[in-house]
Length: 187
Ligand code: URA
View (tube, rainbow, N blue to C red):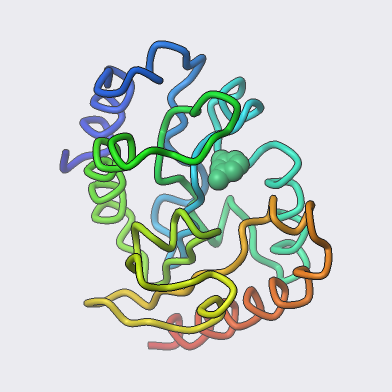
């Protein structure tokens, strides 16, 4: 999967997991495919499954609003996708089997976008991108370097809808992302 066409074809025809039978759309990703910044969430929800785009439901609107305030847009500044490309029933957390089946698509996507900064939205993305020994409450907001990538995890925007007290930390993390992006663009 070394071209977008190949990746998209592979995702659209994928039937590795039983959840593929219930999907309306495969949700591959959205935004600027040449962006320096990439956000990775968990899996499509109901609205994403309907529209075929990531983060277009309530959580996505909250994320877009926060990023708008930092003058970061999908169109110009970032690419966004998920660990899973199909919606798990009732938005349950992806199983290990589903994540391992879907990760090759995400790896191909990262190679095609070539971001400098990756932001994991929530514990599931953090687990598969940064490793299992981290905790979102303790390790969010910290920068990690893995190869050429600068990686940070922050709360999933859906967590802010459930617990507004997390908003302050979330905005602080996104500000740090914007600062890092400015640094990266200078070099
Ligand atoms: N939650 C996610 O993790 N991803 C989406 O695309 C939507 C909601």
